[in-house]
Length: 166
Image 1: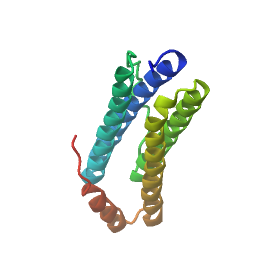
Image 2: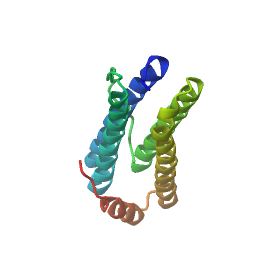
Image 3: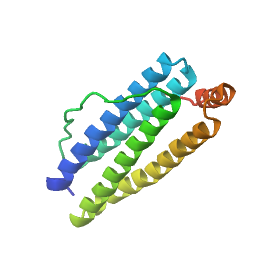
Image 4: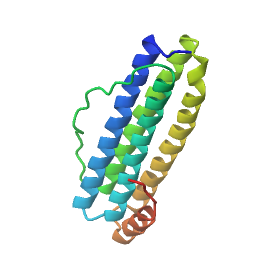
């Protein structure tokens, strides 16, 4: 079944959002480098790479179904990051935005009776639940340690151990 109309346009918007998320995560990585948290910066860089992979999943789905993926304009991230907590609060807010966008895609696919998109969207729904839970847990732990330097450094060390392809 060819992917057309409202759903194709919604997929294009999601591609743009996923790439914008990658840019947000790259900026958060830069902010953490400036604040001398290279492990946390590495974690954010890995997140950025994951967002690019997510955009690619949508691009492949569209091209497999005869649609033409188009990347829209992306504004520069407008972040005011003064702490590690600020960075993860921004991350969680962005993940929540992406999650709602995925849910809206699912609604559009249902309204368009596009059964072929549902497996992909189910994968993304599961992924977003995991993403929000992970970032929320990190944020909770950061709030728990507060300004305790040794606590932040433990979190820094743990996040630095994440492997990344980017």
